[in-house]
Image (cartoon, rainbow, N blue to C red):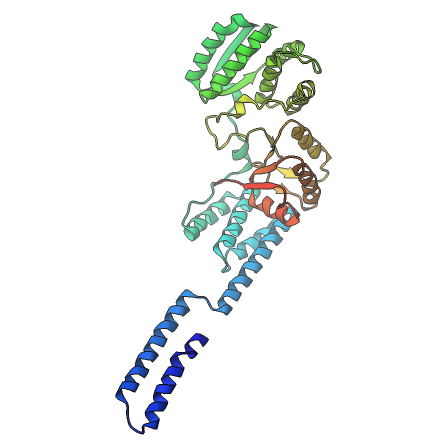
Length: 386
């Protein structure tokens, strides 16, 4: 290296020249020269192991750039429906030397692609290789059926509420609360609900809240009659002093996952009281398995996003009107069509200029495409947890 030429060899040459001029051997000079050569050799070895050469750095940079381009090309191919071509690219990419972070991304995308194809054998083979390569646990297999499977409500223990929902219902609700806590997961059925008043609404709302505090998972059945009677107690545009009817209605619609009716109730509430609707109580406390619970106030994205987008964008915009933060739950989202990516991001970035927008539980295949197309600005993209 040049640094050694500045002092090592020059010093050696001067000592040896002085010895030649004296026309006789200089034992001390020869000894000094030998020591300098040894020090130079030691320093050369130390620098060569601790600092990469410019050519090595250039090679690493080129490898990183090439792998990044391969990853982006694979995301485009997958988004365009060319799954086999994307798989072939990623299969080659994981065998190439590259910075570990980029290489790990290629592995994760390949594993997700196997999931999208439903090829569990290939997934398990590469998951084992992933664990050996990175010395960490691989992500678990999650086929579409596994991700969306829920316990059948018909197989859960059933608790029944019947008659009037009023202040006199508190003893019955307290009894149901105790029974629900023993089962932890159960179905609450409403049978022949004859009357409803605000005191009863408040009692039921408190009971639902207490179940959530006890991490009970509640499934509701036969809610239509109850919601009809609650709607008779409230009126859009009429600002009542007691909001309990509104709150119970929105809570029930949230629990039965009637997205359309829930969003409509939120909008009516916001117009009536000129404030944002309250958050569902059931989303504020984790259920039994927080890893499978839907995100707080989240809009569930479909498994595939393709053109035309008008229906999906209309639903997202309706959801956005009811919440201060727009959370898009992407855990079921497997693929965004390449042609749909740009208009989707255009609308999401427009919303992000008004209020925060988060894409949660996003796959790597989807996030790479979105960032490539232009979604790494105002949007917050959070990947799936392994």
